Length: 74
Image: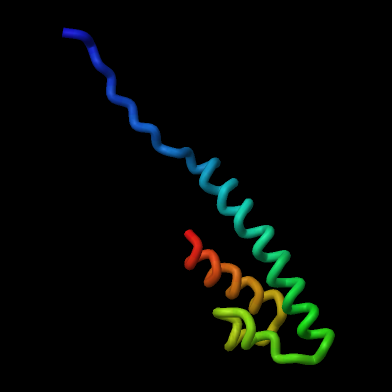
């Protein structure tokens, strides 16, 4: 019989983090621009972004919205 080795093709943690940042960063920039535009116009931008309804600051609201959005696409 031939000697067979069994190796698993598990993605490394480094690749997972890179993929996370490649999704997180563009989503964060997009949602931040929407929130800043809404803030400048004087509209309630928290209602537009899912997960940002109860947040008081711009960055924390966008951060929560990005993670809520990412949970739907991943």
